[in-house]
Length: 420
Image 1 (cartoon, rainbow, N blue to C red):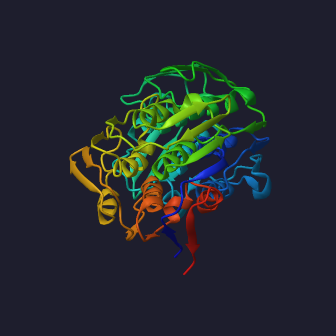
Image 2 (tube, rainbow, N blue to C red):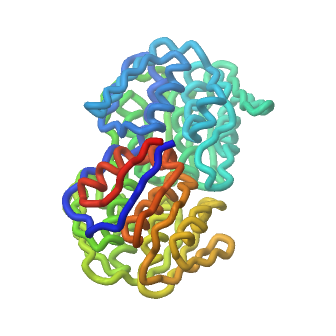
């Protein structure tokens, strides 16, 4: 299995370009199943999760061409013959469950294995199923699969989400675009990735209003056409490089970003003593001063993103003072803390809160990436730890960061990938 070896280096400096958003492209790939035409998706991050989703829709009958050199994906969904999403693919990645909405809308049936993905806590799909049931789907669960069927087309309905789940909002939205009548999703997620999916669907011919607000109205249409669409920049990748720059005391310009999508990260970094300046599509991060402790509480967008929580914990481990980090979105997202503590971090966990006492230095150690963002946090800690840090299980990191080690080396980091 591959691993990273990291030695403490000089502050990061230079320019880096953020890739297309992983959390945007996965539902967009699923949405391509809604048309029997050909869709071209540009600014694709060539990640393991993207490849898994491509395998899945190929299993369903789509023809897929991933042009990695051009960061382009071409999908022909004209011959969807299968409605069963197998365990071996869905178990790799939770986002695979997003094919249920499109399959129900277009084929009237879907049989999907219960999803896998990072072990960061309980992430049930009950809100997805509640929405499908409200639209007339019959749902049966058993033997590790969920089977949903419709009698004719789905019917528009008024659906209230108990929690503004991104995945449930996306899945119900995709199901609703081909349903009869109007669907209203209340307490919907408002993340930028929802807006990007809606832009893709609207360009295909869907009738959607209110994306980016907590109430989305969808008037069903009879068919959609294939289109060309460019995915928005990845705010989590950009945020990770912002924190990497800050923890190393560096000076980096991150290009291909939407600064508004990063407001909570920018605000907390400024509070920690980091200088942040914004242009139309770039962010300049300068961190020459000592870092200061800050308190963070994660929330759904536009609050501080849970996907940036672990990276900030790494930074706060070397900040002056005591910080409090509260996780409100997932119930098991502190698994990485025991790994940070192996590097000398002083962190105490109480339920969903972590109290972080800044220390003068971290020490290199052999640690394990317990999930995608936890792996990124350990890489950031390794940038400033004395000695060598060895990170195993980096396949988690490869799921969400395109050429992560190469981009860091471009900025001056001492990081190598070792293939056993």
